[in-house]
Amino acid sequence: MAQSPHSSRQGRTIVITGAGSGIGRATARLLLSQGWNVALAGRTKVTLEETAQSHPAALIHPTDVTDPSAVDKLFAATHQRFGSVDVLFNNAGVFGPAVSIDELTPEQWDQVCQINLTGAINAARSAFAHFKAHAGGRIINNGSISAQVPRVNSVAYTVTKHGIAGLTKSLELDGRPYRIRATQIDIGNTASDLLDDFGANDGALQPSGQRIVEPSFPLEEAAEAIAYIAGVPLGTSINQFTITAGGMPYIGRG
Image 1 (spheres, one colour):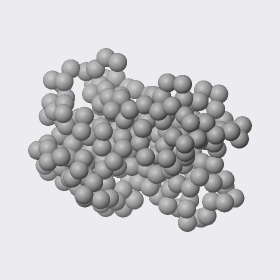
Image 2: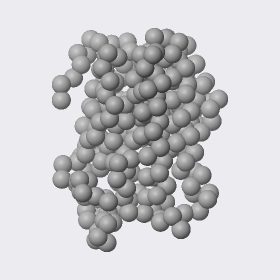
Image 3: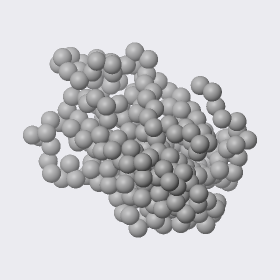
């Protein structure tokens, strides 16, 4: 994958939600190594500190993305520390219960929807307002393969990730006059804790009823894809980007 020159990334600023673990952590560490300023957002300060590894260009800002005022404070703090923000990686999310819809409680649905969808909208709203006032920017929404085709017993996750697809398209359209670009990245089976939530490591349930141990790929490779998108100039739009483990049972799923 061709990468933008690192010189174009020096001193640029990205806000990453869900930065305390998984793909958020891997992306933050990679971008810090490439000269970015990185605002690390997540619920738990200690995990954000573990991500930052005392890097001088990291801003640790515990944030509940379901609280719009907290997200506004995140962007204000990032602007105060680094100046204009260039990119949002809208990454916070949970898989939720692996059940069919008749077994999904209203409380479970509310929890998944609040984090995956309301949280993403809160972060996008704050980013959009900032970018509108600062000549543009890029929003990268972490979708999922489930935004395209569902897994068995993933109704809450799948519905919210389909919502991310609509959010991304709306941001790209409404942001066009302001040089605001939006990308949905759909990642399949990168080696994060999410794989354990649906059993990919031990045997993920397939539509046939079988359980199959599915292939995975390193978090660092998914982070490279996000770093590439983040570094693309605003004269280019990347509306959707799909990256999966080789041999993952994705094509033909559902």
